[in-house]
Length: 102
Image (cartoon, rainbow, N blue to C red; front, side, top):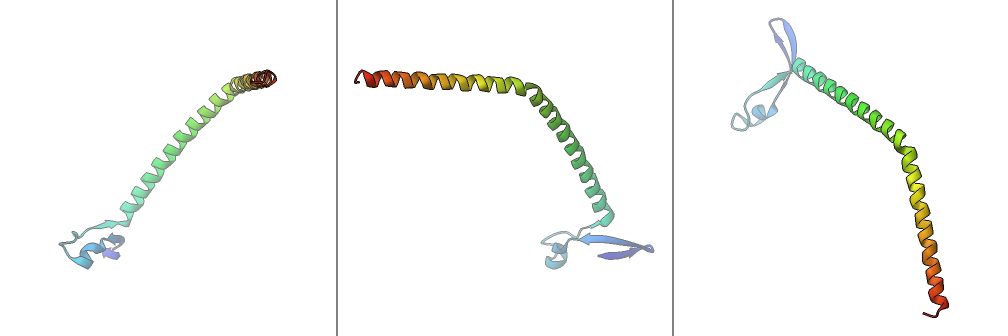
């Protein structure tokens, strides 16, 4: 809704519940466009700050992972070798069992 007040043009958003259904449904209320704009800008700034915080945390975690990655990959290689050795041991035991007839 565009309103003129004291010679100034203002844009307002008006609740249609009151106008469409009466005061039993909703009270008459409105909000000025400037108020909505200010709240949207405030929320956008909050989101920007949260995004910056999350980016900093992501960078920290990436750096931490980069430092630990060689150790983790070495441990994975050790565990894979242990698994390979265990599989060989199992194969040998099965072959012995088959050769003995059991």
